[in-house]
Image (cartoon, rainbow, N blue to C red; front, side):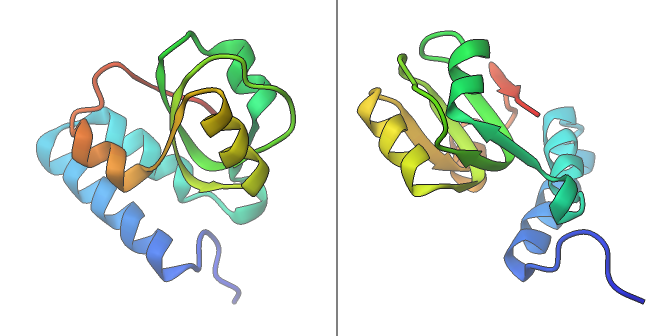
Length: 120
């Protein structure tokens, strides 16, 4: 039988750590992110810069439990945490004055996830 869900060992470890910490410390934000990351690859979230520009406010912190793609224009500085970024997305985030973080870096900065939105 073929495995479903992520097969990347680093992603599996991240999901396990988020889920364990979320249930232990009762942080629903971490549980939500781990559930979204544990989807099958073809069902995992992919968000374009254009959507982030449309739905996010200036200087907002968001988490994309998947990949950020570079289609569109980003006209405001955002702090974006995601599992992966395309090269174009990273360039556009930096050009807009924003910051691109890994999910682990965001959890170190803001363990409870207060003021952070999950974009799916």
